[in-house]
Length: 206
Image 1 (cartoon, one colour):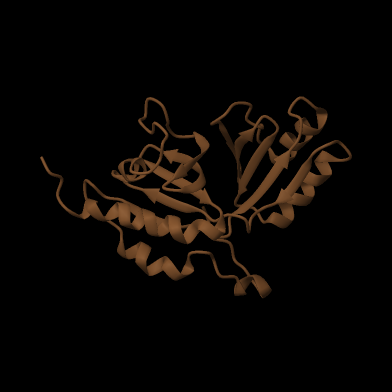
Image 2: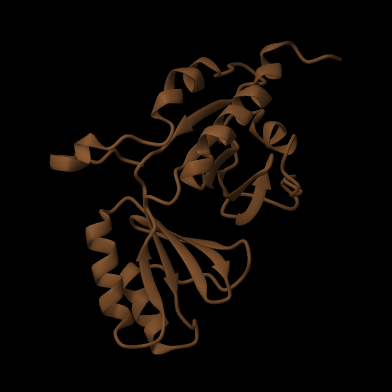
């Protein structure tokens, strides 16, 4: 995801995990049991509520250039946007575009029909866990079946990792996962993941 150039007051922002940047980099493990943890701050996130079987939903889909997924776990990606299913009439739009572009256009598409379009970018942050051991790290505290037969690229569901509620999205086969915790719980989750990663520094016991 390309880094955006910022100016003015937004340059004064501090991400929820800026204070742990050094610890996350230091926790990286290389090799066959490699795993890394990175924060992706300031991703645009927009919550959309609308009846999927209405003209309003179709207008929003046309505006985003992405269909609204209809089933639990589904995501849809197009251009700068990825849309994740949260419920029968609720989605989270994750975008590389500025929120000032995504929200007004989606609000206009909704029009006077029932529903809502809300900027929730400050509500969560994004953690990326990737590498050969990433799934094993998550399996220490996630109740989902993360085996490829049950969960693979493009899947995103609400779950828990340790005691923290997250939206968990598997991005690719490496595997790479993105976790979206509430900002106020991000510190705990990052420290939990750093601790869970530590054992992979040692050789695997035969």
